[in-house]
Length: 464
Image (tube, rainbow, N blue to C red; front, side, top):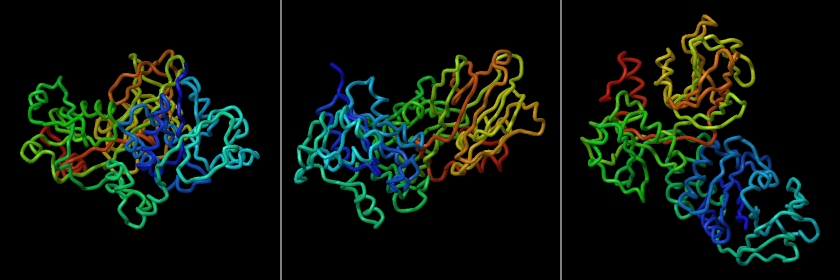
């Protein structure tokens, strides 16, 4: 018997406790509940109130921990609005798709005048052939004759509306009773729905917050510190990463969808993404005075030797490099325009501001401040064009690095140091849905580390 899949779409702007309660109610009747926050819609101006990265983060937070509930960030990542018939087609192989709608959308259905029939793309076809789960709130009167042919009604008593939450936030009113605790804290931290341009960093505290530990057991120093921490993983409000920058990158790659802040303790070398161990162990832990930084990730499309394209995310950087003794011949497009018709080099790299202090810096690029609205494209041992080394890119830029001679001069791709194999092309942009929150002691934030690199000359030591 096919699985029953509930397709629960909406703006979720923001997702409130009423959305979470509805999703939980749906799990009692379906094998999977798919939450689909929509992309920008011309008929719903509120979907453009926030950059999609904040809506994506709030959606993951609001529905976290609910069994059988999955959040699909496709629309937010691709900056598009997927119609209901397209969503049904996308998930058809998973099982029997049921569209979750309110009774307001089916009123007038008996006369062919419902919103579904009149305003949905291919609405008439969906009405006749698709399955609908109609949510009926107590006290809301409707005519059963208006129901679609293939439908079920679920009685719910879950009041709430995102517009009410936005209104209260705009007026500075308390909304803690309307939001999941983590979502509420996140909205407060970055001033969402209050300022036209939300912040990307905030001062706060981790004092008395439960946490879980991700420890690099391959690092002897990190393993020796295991007893220094007292984790409460079932109630964690942040993740403590013990190791070096490599351990942090692995942890971000594996856990960013948890939407928990990452606090690093340096047991490695440079430790740019980490906090100095001496600061951690010489004071109360978790620390009281910290800075939260929401840092963007890279959205990457990797075209393999056979032309098949896979997608992944990176935090620091992604690059291609020659895989033989011969130099790579590359063509670089920016927003579809060929900017480097023939780049002869050992390779090329793209890096976020956070990643600009790593390989990008070793290739000669200047590090960027963490909140710089830009990212980098850098060449490695460039032979042609003779005078080109790097470029500063706006955050809405899209890059394609393609091999001009994949047979004779093959290239390999890497994402945060992880080998992706032989490729024909790498496409990259700043993600609209993926980000990681890093936390630093207030007296040793990323800004101080970048200052150390630029003014001290020798860069950072392990103790920094």
